[in-house]
Image (tube, rainbow, N blue to C red; front, side, top):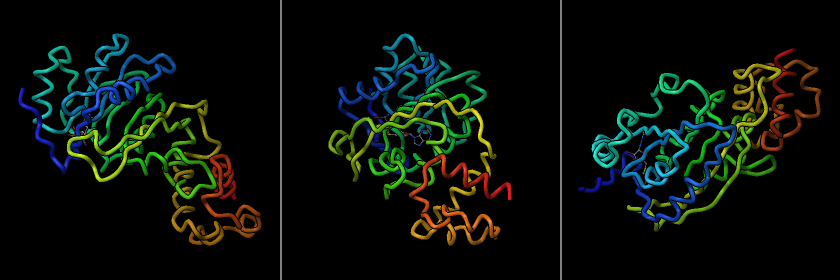
Length: 258
Ligand code: SAH
C-alpha cells in the first residue's frame, strides 16, 4: 500500500518506532472499566495496530486527513464505521459514546491544548487520556504549583484529573522529525464530582489570575472590582502560579459569594 505523504499543516509526524508505539498503547490502564477507546489522528495506524490487538477495547478513530482515511479503510476493514472522518474538535462525541470512554493518540501538536479543553467539556464521560504532545506542553499540563510551567490548562485539568508525565520521545523516531521533543502523558478522572462554585466562574477566575502571571492576584484581578473584604484576604498577595487547585476553588467561591 502506498504510504501517506506527511502534510505539515495537519501536524503529521508519523511515529516509526514500534516499541514506543506499544509503550503508548500500554499507557491505557482500563481505569474504571471502560471498553470504548477513541484514537485521535491515527495517520497510518502505528498505534492502531497495537490497539486492535487489545481485544478488550472497542476502537473508534477520528482522522481529518482524507488520504489517511482511505489508507485506514483498506488496512483495517474490521474498523468499518468506526473510522470517523473529520475534525476531532468538531466531533459530537455524545453521538458516538453513551457511557465512559478513553482517548489516546499521538496528537497533532497544533491543536493539543484545544483537545484537552474539549476533554474537559466531556469530563463525565472521558475517564482516561493517554496522549503524546509537544514535551513542553506535556510538562506544563502535568506541573503543580510553584512551577513556572504551571498554567491555566494545568489548573483546569487538575481540578478533575490526576496527571502523570510518562516518558519523553526523541525527534528522530518520527517522519518527518518535529522540531521539538515530545512527551507522553496520562490523565485519569479523579473523585471530584461537583464544585462548590460553578465551572464557568472557576474557569473565568483561573484565566484572569494567569492573565498577568507575574502580578499578585490583587493586581491581576483588578478589573473584577473586588470588595474590600476580598482584597484584605492574604491570598491576594500571592501570584497565580503559587495557588493549588483547592486555593483556586476557594478563591472563586470567595469572589463569587461576595
Ligand atoms: N498516530 C499517527 C499520526 C500522528 S500525526 C502516528 O503516530 O504516526 C497526527 C495525526 O492527526 C495525523 O494523522 C493528522 O492527519 C491527524 N489530525 C490532524 N488534525 C486533526 C483533527 N483536527 N482531527 C483529527 N485528526 C487530526
